[in-house]
Image 1 (tube, rainbow, N blue to C red):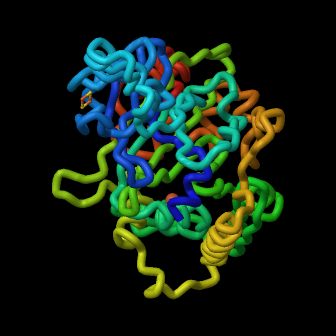
Image 2: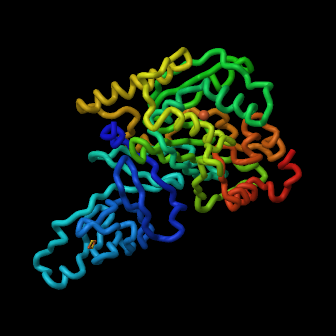
Length: 407
Ligand code: FES
Ligand SMILES: [Fe+2]
């Protein structure tokens, strides 16, 4: 499976994690690496260890082009070539030993405020330019968590509509100390494949076939993503038993605040545990994390009893198994884009898209049944820093009209 996942671009960080050029350690797809931004602003991803005598490159210093090892000064470009070996360049310049040494390197691209890498064979597919990355007048934040379990059980959560009713709606009622009323029951679910993954659709007792829950559905984005209109989630594997959970969340500003231009997209990492060691359960993703890690470091599927609600999970598993066979025999992996002309603001099925594009007046927004509720607090993950909350409130105009915002 690891070789298969290497056929895709993966988000691994955020541009705003670099307040200044520098280097930081990172582990992705089971490899210990160094992510850096050099003095020209370019990003690179290289081995954690220097090929000279194995010093830790995450303590290296960045130059106008590339990263220099802090032990003997060897300099490596973003493509992994050794550009300088300061002592050897003086003592034995004819040998050009630097031409014979490379460090493992992967390409890094910035898009949507995220940093992405591709760790597979050439040629790399296009880095998908999903349409929401180009939406205007939005406040975006990027949220990380390091979750101690396998990525696939988390991704199976992306094709599991019924859990919303129990894990988010009803459990939140119980966590508030109430025993009801519970959220609307699911009456029907359906699943289908599309160009970029799988879609689930649902009818609840409060909705019908005209609802966007059925006509649009929600997207399990192949292979590790989840897309729900106003936000993406990715479950990037750090290794077999750890996920880098990444949320990219878009909040449309009210029409009164247009035009809104966001500078650097803020990013933050949320805590996972309460002081007593139990998992935090107050926010949507934290509740999901409880399910994922509760299934074990790697869920034992032989002990499961799949039921009618799990049709999407079965579809996803079958699709992964078929893909492993097909790509192992030389086929192109599904949901990759190879044509740059096609890779421009690629649309995905999105509920409330008209709102994200055109906005609403603040007073109508705050009363809106779907887009209004996330305005009161960041709903997806615990631990939003105060500075990000204040920037969000300023973008929304809530700092100017706190009384109305609380309505
Ligand atoms: S160990 Fe890196 S330059 Fe010597
Ligand atoms: Fe969930």
